[in-house]
Length: 125
Image (tube, rainbow, N blue to C red; front, side, top):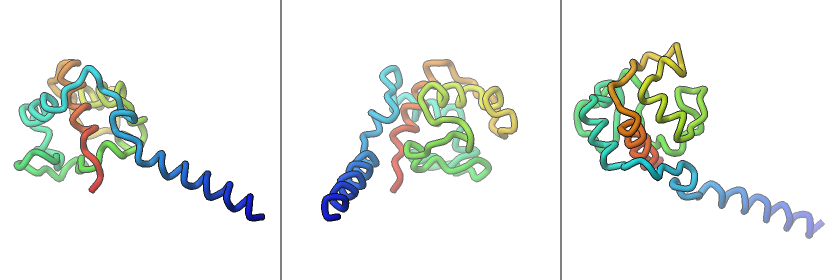
């Protein structure tokens, strides 16, 4: 019985250690620049609808807060939170989620990857 308890403990510890996986490993964005993403977020006005860490004003309340975004398993409650999906979503949310209130955004593919790279820096507090 003691062996079984130890085995269970090891499985639990291994599972918990996966929670601490580096964000870059969870969401690799080699073609994206978080710094350029923050600038694109500011220029496009994302904070008019969302609370965006790193943007002082405005602090929108129409869309969800983006705090801790990197740890979220889903985008818009139903889409896999992976780099390609996020990049497509920030450019044209209605194409992926027709019921989304988020409009298509005037972002290039490169800018959208930068925005995704920035969002993946946003860890829960």
